[in-house]
Length: 297
Ligand code: R5P
Image (cartoon, rainbow, N blue to C red):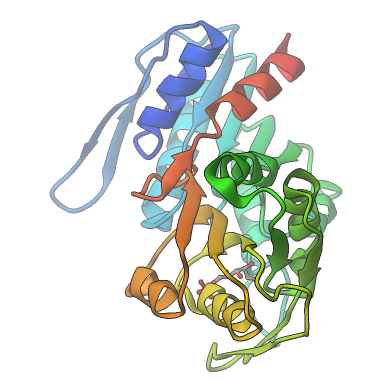
């Protein structure tokens, strides 16, 4: 197995290689003055399983293109199997046509990955596991969705949040709160969220929950603008919650997200290193390494 950390996940890729006890072979990468990427694999892959590790957080399009270049080159140079580990899978939120004429982004990304030669796609907390399964049925590439929520919850438990109530900001993410709740042991629930499809504005329906004078954790897959998390945190604080932590797998934190969540009264923010930020206190390296061991041995 040849571990190839891409330019967007060099540190994480090297950690995965360390956990597997093998050498990492980061790609040689440059950006030309016009913005185009240069990619060169640095280890022979002929007859090998090439494991490419590349997250696709912003700038998504550049990072996706680099991923396609690495997968295509590995296949072209005779890799027996091309396994793409994409810790944060961009474009997964546009998994259906909400409005007539819209592009099916998730399907397009998967289709392109398969076309360039990927045999496996491993992602962490894909926005909607059901959508991934739907797309899987139309493609040959084998897809696996791993969850980092139990790791985040373990971290929070060690940090003093044992027994806290676990909340998902939306009904569709209730399973995430349930996973967190299994570790924290303080029950779980969800609010409801509606997003205006044209303006993007969010409305949160705050349901009454058993959180008065208790600690609570809001779990979500992504924090992007911070709007969803901020509404969930303030909904809990208004109901008398004591400390409220915000936990997400993918910390995109665009614009003023951090202040937006802090202004809502959050007490602690934690994320994983699928996207490397100051909030990345939990690593998914071991989760990825264990999965690779299981499928490739
Ligand atoms: C959406 O359904 C996701 O699960 C997140 O709740 C959402 O992407 C967060 O976005 P933002 O931080 O911009 O509200």
